[in-house]
Amino acid sequence: MKRIFEEMQDDENNPVFTALNTIKTVHFARFVFLDTETDSPKLLVVTTYDGDEDEYFDDFLASPTAAPVFDRILSHIKDAPFLPVTENKEEFKKYLREENGKLPALLFYSAYPNKTVETILGGSGW
Image (cartoon, rainbow, N blue to C red; front, top):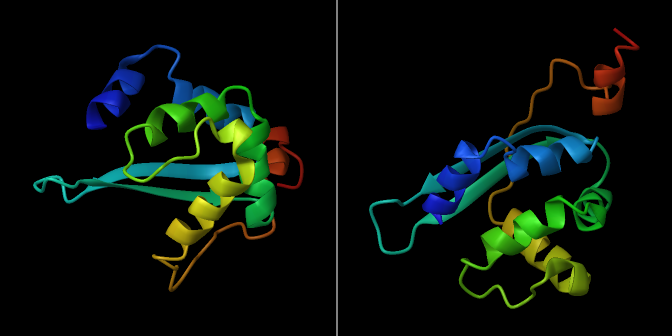
């Protein structure tokens, strides 16, 4: 799976960046591989977004560029039977909720807690 991310990173039209740019609620996204020295490396995805969790998931499912990225990544994840994600929306959201709950944030800080991505990109409110 690491190779997939390396290929996407080298792509001039990086599909992850393209997908995230279509979703106007994501502030930051970080993709980190854990346990890379083992036979079962893990992918940690950390994002900061506007709105609630369900709206966030729906944004990805509604995006014609984001959903295929998830399909590509999840096709390499053990026990991910819900592909394509656009045809298995509830199973996809359930999977994300379950995985998200394994690493709850103990502390979160934002220098601009009341600013949305749309406000920041639009330049209003600063």
